[in-house]
Length: 76
Image 1 (cartoon, one colour):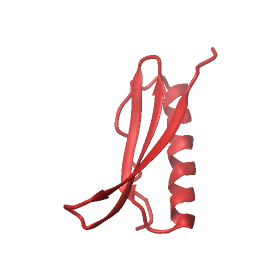
Image 2 (cartoon, rainbow, N blue to C red):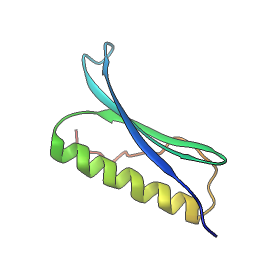
Image 3 (cartoon, rainbow, N blue to C red):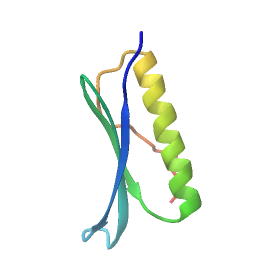
């Protein structure tokens, strides 16, 4: 089964945490997967982005409905 996924990220300043954050999204025909994490460094950003993509691919393979993706072992 072929699935089209649109990955995107949006960076913003969160006044509640007083730091920059990034929101990763993956949009499919059924909805969107998303995760929000602090924007710490370029290296951590790439690691989080790769981790998000891998988890979304796993969710799609397991037919998990669109939801928030937990990156709980994220490096802060």
